[in-house]
Length: 256
Image (tube, rainbow, N blue to C red; front, side, top):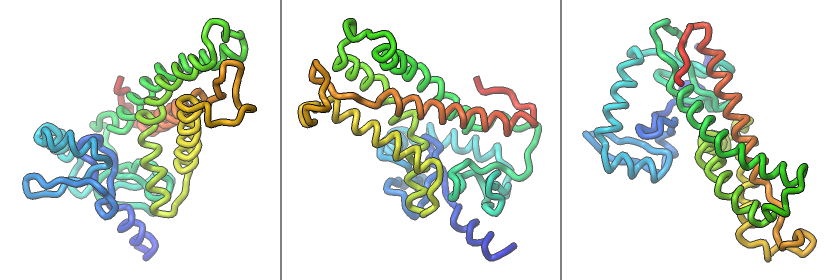
């Protein structure tokens, strides 16, 4: 194997958060806990708290996942085959989940497919009314029914969990791409949706700090909740379709 490949093998080595199953780099992880003589790493304080409250629940799930992968199975990135490591993880270049080099017809649907599918459907259910409210104001002049400021508050409640929770994998991957200096599409998605959400939150919570030219007749400021939520849902849809396409040759069933 070339020196370049060996470098990537070492660089892509990581572990999984036992709670949310996200890939975590032990060298940069801010949250960890000791249990059963082993150090467990987490992507956030929330996952660490859940684990500390009931570690056996998540360790049993971790053991089941470990047993389902043959010992020594090598995983690789479908876009960057030079990335290889033992066990699942994420490509440090493009952020895609690594796949086993040798697959079996006995394998069930991937955990990432179920993970992304669940976030997609929840995000779609919340983003759809945001889209309808925003487009209704532009196309059907529903401002006399729902004022712009009231619309902003409704969108805040519905769109924020779409971007923050449903889009969490993209923010994690985007942050990792910055740390590893391998900027990719997740970097752009995280920056675009994150900035749109932060601006919209400020515009809704404190519209008075904006210049008068930004204000509508009721004092509200235009927001971008709809844009950020729809982008997250569309990217999730792309991830789900991509994962399904990769598993279709194996004849795997859908996780829903």
